[in-house]
Image 1: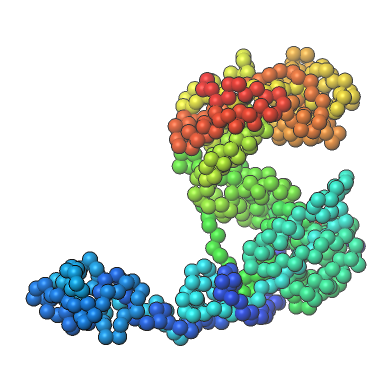
Image 2: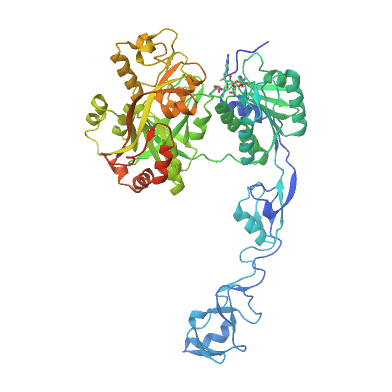
Amino acid sequence: MRKTVLDNIPIVEALYRLQRRISFHPETEWVPVADAGGRVTAEPVRAVSSMPAYPASAMDGIAVRAAETAAASQGPLRLREGKDFIFINTGDPLPADKDAVIMIERVRELGEGIVEIDEPAIAWKHVRQAGEDVTRGEVILPSRHLLRPVDLGALLAGGVTEAAVLSKPRVAVIPTGSEIVPPGKEVGRGQIIEFNGTVFAGFLKEWGAIPDYRGIVPDEIDAIRRAVSAAVQECDIVVLNAGSSAGTRDYTWRVLEELGEVVVHGVAARPGKPVVLALIDGKPVLGLPGYPVSAYLSLEWFARPLIQSWYGLEPEEKRTATARLTRPVTVKPGATDHIRLRLGRVDKELHAFPLSRGAGATLSMVRADALLRVPAESRGFQTGEEVQVELYRSPEAIDRSLLFSGSDDPVLPCLESMLRERDPSFSLSMEWTGSLGGVEALKKGECHMAGIHARGGRGCYFQKEMKDISYVRIHLAKRRLGWITAPGNPLNIQGAEDLARTRIDLVNRPRRSGTRMLLEELLEGKGIEPAMVSGFSREALTHLRAASAVACGTADVALGLEAAASTFGLEFLPVREENYEILLRRSFYESDAGEKWMDVLRSRGFRQALESYPGYDGTRCGEVL
Ligand SMILES: Nc1nc2c(c(=O)[nH]1)N[C@H]1C(S)=C(S)[C@@H](COP(=O)(O)OP(=O)(O)OC[C@H]3O[C@@H](n4cnc5c(N)ncnc54)[C@H](O)[C@@H]3O)O[C@H]1N2
Ligand code: MOO
């Protein structure tokens, strides 16, 4: 029997339903203070000794008895070493017969053990009293305190060498799926490399748990039952991954229902809907969806608060910012949508660029600077609307992010790495919007630079568009474009005329990309209507993705870069060479960041990297046009 209708419970409510049924009982462990960072105190910690343990001099100078220096108020007073004073350094114990220190700057040394002072000393001045910093018996830290490096210092200062901390929760991580194979194994068709488990383990560790990775379990009900039963025995929290939804082999909820009680199956969230929250022997068991984005987000919604409640800690406040959307975000009401965003600042304005929405878009989590939660009752936001976002990166890092928009080129990421090797505070945020898209973004002030391919005639499109904008035009490379086909060109595709043949499937590039415009031009030249070309409306975002479609046989031909064809070992038939250029906002070009960018672009290293790509000519790289 499969289950096709899931609950639609808001995340907070779902968590509450689980959490109110659980009480954790962490144990107390004694650990050396030096190893206690990141742990949580199990009880109040009292100082066992004082710091300083004796009255100590706070300055370099002489130790005296204040009353014996009173005469200095009448005029210079001479003191004799050993009798009236002793020399003392910062931190030295104050002799029992002394009660003040005079700084050496206020003392004239006359030689032969004689010094002269002009003012009387004040009792206990420049003296650190015993226990002034930490007093024996004093409570240094309360119970349920997350230990930071400064806390460890205070514990050691108070003579504490071992701290009583709460044991860490042990969290079982069980990736499920017969199609899942361990990393490093050869991946066959229909198989997927297991990586969610490693991500889970990393997050769990960061949040203070001990991840217990229990290996891949196939989609077999008995195997899952055995794995869950053992994990519940040995761990405090159990996290299963995948098999949470309605597939014929999605056994998670069934096993959890059989072994315990399913409290929630389905939350009002996108992605992340098919979450299963269950209780077995009083322990929480989370069945999280398999798609990576859903998996990571739902782990944070449910596992993180459980770990915090294990320690009795409050959730940390999230850092937020207000940013302006560069594109609309449209959603269906009824569930909270989670939109990953890239952020970047151009001339003071913080822009937000929605990333791919797919639950399987692993890279959207890597590239995301922030998360936008669209409330369940909302239908979304329009372009230009200001939204409140949760930050994944520091505001400082976001301010150093260079925004690039325009035509896809595979060498640009290597430019980013070279920039970061010189100054790691910078990052490059690339958005492939096509040449026209890049020009538009530059015009709207939504990027620092735009990558375009400029061609003669119709290719000068951008100059008219950009007439009110102050920018600098830089040559990056000459690159070769052509037909990409299967090795050996089995369908004998020689030009645009062949695209109208039956049984030839094209994979195209997005509207507003220069390559798409070139294709349209070539078809027009042969009098072929786009409607006559099978696959004309199928769009691959990048050159590499277009080549990938040809490589796995879902398309027969693409128009694209020789470099992309060569990555996949495909056939390449040259069509034309084009100049790839970067248009930089003048304000950026003249900034410190712009200067660094240009240095890298003109470096020998980049030129060499550029020319290692098949079909690239970097001779004029960095030339201002
Ligand atoms: N008819 C319906 N189909 C689906 C629904 C639905 O409501 N009705 N929900 C969709 C949603 S939403 C999600 S999310 C997924 C959840 O699927 P499962 O939790 O059952 O997971 P699988 O189908 O087994 O795997 C999905 C996908 O995830 C990747 N995966 C899984 N495990 C790992 C791993 N350990 N490491 C890396 N990647 C993993 C893999 O790409 C799988 O293809 O169901 C939809 N379907
Ligand atoms: O949870 Mo699914 O992740 O909505 O795609």
